[in-house]
Length: 299
Image 1 (cartoon, rainbow, N blue to C red):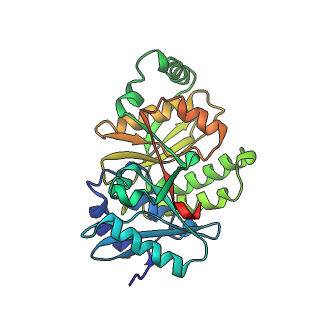
Image 2 (image 1 turned 90 degrees about the vertical axis):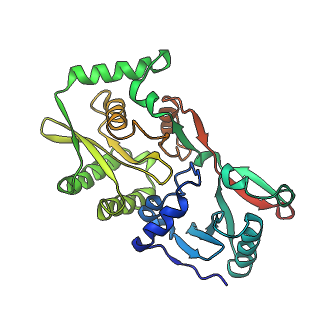
């Protein structure tokens, strides 16, 4: 029997302990991510002795994740999940399959399935020392941007606290209004996630920073170190009227918080050209690939 329920804050220690040491790279396999986006995509869990099962819902499609195995096998647990979904959901798909948990299937089992890359959802994964040191020719432009920012502006780089949360929300609204061509319903959805970040800031172990210029906020960023010692940037918003500010806040935040992590995950580009170009310009060491999983006879 499978009985799903919404994820809650009290699930923190159980889920974080299950995720720890699994080697997950992608951002979705993080308790904080699930809590931030739980209303938007309706994250639910079913916690059994054999595995933790996770599902979400978006665009009227039920989206299941590969199980986090405890005492069962991936073959057995996925078959159970598939049978349950076929009976209970008219429209469903398996999303965010990662290479590390795909490898838990037996080779014989995988012969019956196709794994299709979800390219627009790939996470950008960086070495922390690259983001901090910006060494070499390939980062020459980034160093120039930061030098220009340092020379043009008298700024402060400050830790984000609850005293700044309302100011961040106001800044976020102005930021979104400056980019109407990129914002659809995602505006409201991201605001819900940002409000959750502030609501559960301490409980989720989040931290943040902001840049102050001429007495006002010019940009902010929020991140965490997740269960697998990966630094994750959940939000980053800056006023581009200040030249070089994104390069500056990126480097300072990485230096302050991510110097000892395995990798830094700056998440996906959502298929947006500008965002893709920006993330590629930091030269990821690899991409956190995500796959759809389909039965061969259903293709």
